[in-house]
Image (cartoon, rainbow, N blue to C red; front, side):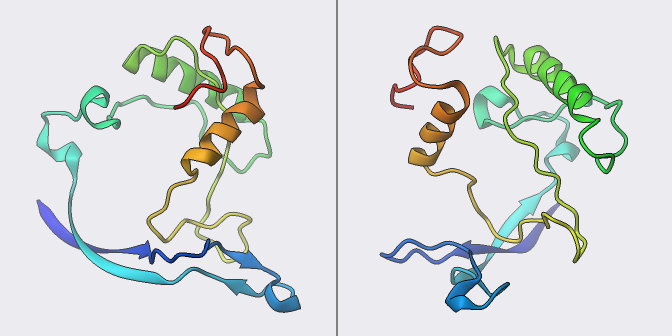
Amino acid sequence: MTQTATVNYHVHKPERQWFELNAGGIVGNLIAPELAPTQVRVFDERGFGTGTSFEDASVGFANFPSQVHSFADGQSWRRIYDAELTKLLTDEIDAKEVIVFDHTVRRDDPDAARRPARNVHSDYSLHGAKQRLIDIVGRGTLPNGANATMPL
């Protein structure tokens, strides 16, 4: 069933925008980019049964129950979760190597360290993604033989 949802896009401006904490010398002051609420059509892809393939859409759905039942127990869940994620990606998209490089647990709680993202966003720009890759695996040759400084 198709529905309409409101999503918040960042308004493109000539100057760089970001969330700024402690702005204007005020501790905890948050300045957010200007947002443009936009109506979009959405539907639950899982209900169609045809399946979305990773090859066609860069997204897919899989039933892969986890042994991790809580992300609240410090860091103890990471080893299990990373192994499960590696198995899922090698099984589902035939990944030859998986490097898990970030764990962001978001909680919808005013006291949470990381709250849910409320705006349409990308975690990395093209430049930021290239730099993150270099930060993780270093310059030179990646484990699969690719060059870490090659254009993505």
